[in-house]
Image (cartoon, rainbow, N blue to C red):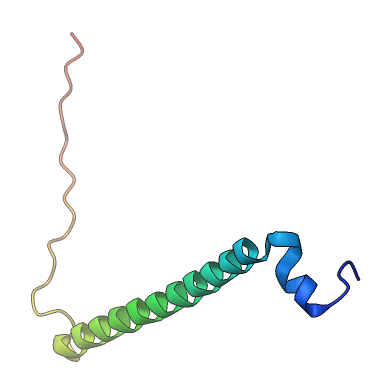
Length: 77
């Protein structure tokens, strides 16, 4: 092992506070991102579920217009 003791490992020859602060910020960011992601997923899931339940068994209340294909005349003068 490169360090003689646990306290030497934590101090890391004077670089310990910087290193451990970086690790702490990383862990906080990962936990925060995971929490935010789970919260957004849950909100999106509930929104889709409510929308689906409001439609009823016959589908959307107003049918969407069918696609139209119109010819566009392009002049190449």
